[in-house]
Image 1: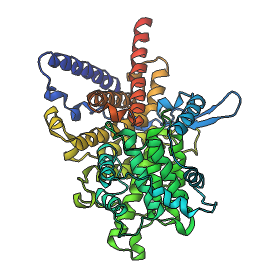
Image 2: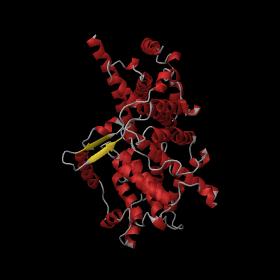
Image 3: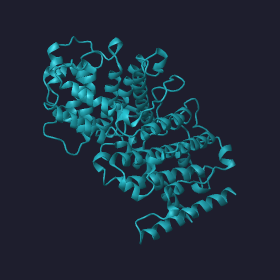
Image 4: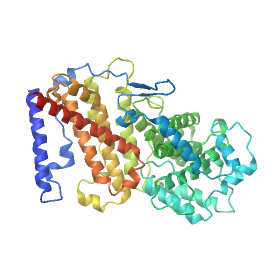
Length: 499
């Protein structure tokens, strides 16, 4: 029966491809039978799938330079591109470029070097100098914030738009006391992210590297540890971590990974992982803490999956509830962020907790992988984010369209990485016939998700190439996706030749 199911599934895929090619010849609209929801259906697991317990070896990969001067460990779900190791040359070039692009006074550089420990006495004049690097006109600063939410804020929202605009206006109001240094760091980090990806920078804007240095300088005014740490400290560090991830031209966000670890330690030091209501905090403050914690958890969890490494914080070591933001509190519809928090909690964190266990010489049993597969698929994307046809995608605004593709690509990439180890086992095991292998369910799931990822990237690459050039995660998933169909296709060719 299992053999018959595999043969029928392969035949269905061939018919779907033929129908797609025939439809493309006279219509730009997909055939109703080729709806994404139907294409994502894979053959149900068999009894044999649940009985198989031995899987691929799961030690991960330790990469060591010939002279032993550098090393890097990647786990079983790591993005394929991370294995392309030419970091030394790229890091040297990136460091040279970084200092070529900054133009600040020596006092500011001293503050930057004071980050993160804040052990050097700070000159009061240097503090005042920081404010001189803000745009001279309030309208330019507001435009930087507005562009931030167009280019970056749709993905992660550590500071709601109304709050951020209020902070900027405070900076230009002489009747109000200056912002605290770590709150000023938030502003500079936002400016750094905006100028990093914006297609139409204004001449009065400073370079992205300069703004990121100013953010670190503002964090260097006071120690980020101890009693001087606040929620603003965590927000600024989180945004700086995101900047490291997007700005690293090498495509290896190792600095972001390290900065995220530091951010989590500071977050724990102010009890951000606990529910603020137990200390009778006000509703608004408790909501702010929840939002920052779950946004930080989302960044960290997704990076952990991309590296195949343990996350910074796992259950049951936190009880912070998920936030319940509204369009009024965020400044834009909350559907994507609510789904993102739920998906990270119920989907990705479950993969990290069960599929990346290190107390065994083998990977998790195939039965656990199949249960996690079901869990990921059950995290239904909200109807407002699905945009099932070309017409709805054409009518959607830019933020909604990007959130649609991000939610879809997030699910498909998680499924691909979840099944990839068993997919590889089925491809390389004799007689090299993966669709008749005992892990054929993983073969089909991995292959289907890889194809869906490539399809989504093809649809979005041209209109949003300026953003995708910086969001390396999408390119990394696309690279991993291309590897899976290639393996399957090469195996099929070799089998045909041998016959």
